[in-house]
Image (cartoon, rainbow, N blue to C red):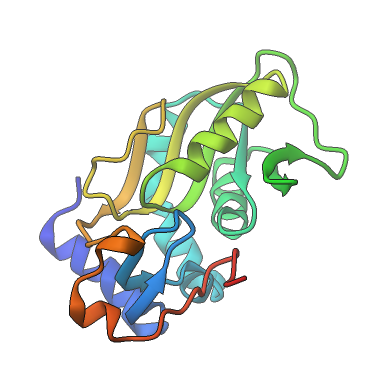
Length: 195
């Protein structure tokens, strides 16, 4: 759990990098929100990425993982930096026909303990799908780590989840938008753009 000062420092990193956005956004979960955290922007500076990931290394190490896996596209930079700081191998799962799969010659040794790295958790769906992919590949998911848990700690991913910060940011189903949000044209800045 971060102190209020530590939480504010993390948010300052997001603001300073232009990664804390306000408007009308469609999240990868399909839910809508007036706030979006563009982790690709905050992680594009290697020094900033190193600073943000460093407090998560010891909590992640306690999971006892042999490798780090992340869902593409959002978790790749964060997952790689976490693996680098842990001194562990890294791989990522990609969506193929709507399901996460390991490609590019990635394999997981049978029974290997795996920590899942995701940049932002809202509902936990992508993390759960990545966990299912790791299990199908023979791995044993032992925990998950994220930069931001925007569910306020309510997201269930099926393994223990550690977040750099927890935020309780509003999200809405498309048919239940407040009028002030519905009046703004939506953007989908994530890896699954508008169709």
